[in-house]
Image (cartoon, rainbow, N blue to C red; front, side):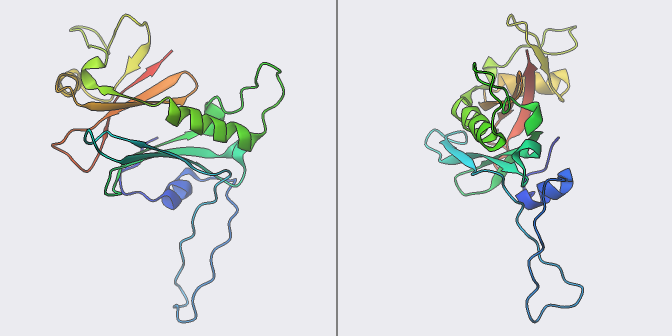
Length: 205
């Protein structure tokens, strides 16, 4: 699921149709018109997690953040966002918490409290997020259906082969995040398009 840069977190929650969200509309002000509505922030089931990274420049203070939207963590949607140093939203990606490792028990096999599991998952995802260069992305051999490399992972991309290889060979700054169970998403920053980061490919074990 993709959302364009500039989409608010509250709008993401509405678009996802979260049944777990049960916040009440804020009261309208005294002078508001009868048909006016007031936007409310989406409820979070646990505290957000953030990390400062340097994607847009070697000394950049870009912000990678994860929020669990929904009043009930067991039904939450985890939203990853990337803002540049100036605070502009460059990339966002959402995944259902149930499709992550948030609720996988530890070795004692005891059930994981939803809020604890979701918060741990977000912390691990951001901690293990990797910065590299797009030339380290898998090659796409001629005649093949998709990118391939010796790892044996299943790689997919929404780009045609020529566009993918052009982005790969430009050796752009790249950020990769383990966002789902056994899956990773990688986005690149091209200085020619300074207001956004674009997904290059995804990998699945």
